[in-house]
Image (cartoon, rainbow, N blue to C red; front, side):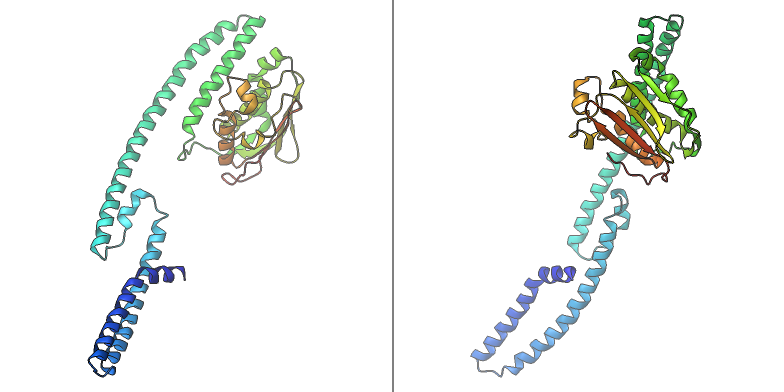
Length: 333
């Protein structure tokens, strides 16, 4: 119905013009005292023929409208091959402009893809190169067991995390397929990350409440480990005293709770936004706002629902619902 109304509006001037012509003939015949049926019968015949032509034209326009509506969902680079044959000179001119725009878009996309790949290659090389001096410094510190060496080891670990975070950010493109789903031991991933971050537990003198979790889930071990490491790192960063607890809260619901500074209520709905650091992050100049953003993106692709509960000065609990299908998760906070 909407299309018919639009069509009639577009051709309303032609309808009115036809009626005006008929009225002119009628007035002329009347002024010259000619019989009016001589103009009424041809007018009626023209109206019938015009109605038939309008019906055929409206049907053709409706089909073209349906086709163009479907084409609206196509990528710009495919449109130029699917555009219907032009029915008028004006349509042909518009299609020429559209083809030119599509060609320019395709050229820009190819240039962007090339630049992005060059940047990704550069950062990948940079990550591997920067790991060499970090590993060398860590090896030199292994022989020492002082408070300074522990602090330096912790700082080196954070450097490695930030380097990996940058590389992960560039790898998280929409076309990424670097996922291998298989049975994964939660206990194995948790123990590896606890062992990696043990220096921060020691330096801050935080208690760890953890008992082996004999749970096997279907996920990608590398990416799931990245998410858990980021959550544990955040808990350690914003907890100065107290403890961090890791436990199962129901089937396939992993919870990581800390007694840290918590998250302000106004910041809680935005913690998964890219680059958003919140009040606590702005207080800590080192915060990048990428950690939780990457966690959310990875969880979405792994089929994990991530939820956050927090109160200022009381602590934060991050929950991972691991039982969803990959690609069908929701993020809540």
